[in-house]
Amino acid sequence: MRQNSAVERSWERAFPFIELGAEELDRLTGAHVTAAQPLTSGLRNTNYRLELSGGVPVVLRLYVADPDACAREAALLAAMAGRLPVPRLLRADAAATPPFALLEWLAGRPLDEVLAEADGATALELAAVCGTALARIHETRFPEAGFLGPDMGVVRPMPAWATAVLAALAGRVEQRLGPGVSVAVRRTVDVNAGLVEPVWSEAVLVHADYKPWNLLVRTVPREPSDRSEDGGPARWQMTGILDWEFACAGCKLIDFATFLRDEGSRPPGFGDVFGAAYVAAGGMLPAEWRRLTRLVDLLNLLQMLIWADDGAAVGLRERVAATVEAR
Image (tube, rainbow, N blue to C red; front, side, top):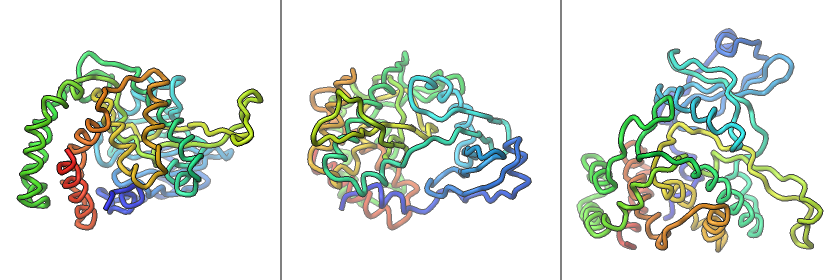
């Protein structure tokens, strides 16, 4: 069974949703809120779509899972403004309990919803749009790989891939995998560490949650010179790259692994078009990027097994088993 975005969307929330009344919403926004809609699709933080007086739509984001992410995400959004389609930061308080940010509401539909009803040609066009945008994210480089602080500097080095995988395997994860799969994971690390570590140690800006539901898209008119008989008068455009709380300085294949995790449910060629668009936009990929991407994703799969509910854990175990068997 392939773990896909629809399944992952249905996982239980890791942190309770915070219910806020009208007075509290007015206080946090510094304005009069005329309408409030909870956004419950995320699994960690609390988000509301609000309308302020005058009909202005905004997003209120409460950083329940990782309070430090508020200042970090604010710095990233400021740095990416004008370069990438990210929401404008309107207000933030990293010292509040919990910290919060008020963000611009961006037009567009979540990519996962669009892909669910798209034909093959549309899906491939969207794959190219997303590959191009990812290349622009990875243009930002750092002197070393690691986790970012509130000033976008590296405050903690990134552990080696082999070290991180074996650390994630310990305890509950090993119990969930069982002895056979756990042994296969260790063998996979031993065999592939020399191949993965040189790529893992690179340091570009990694979104680290580059999933279709964190990407907004819409159609816009094509230029007359860009129209073709089968292409139609409209083209797809990325309008939003959301949820930067996991962003770090690290290996670009982390984002490839996240975006292509459910590639098996997409039309043939989806991943190849994504990779080709990334390269055409100036990104660079290693020769064995497909194999390396699967190995890099092994770490993320193990980390998700730490907190996933029992139902999700079954699918994750199958994905881990398939990865180490297909090495």
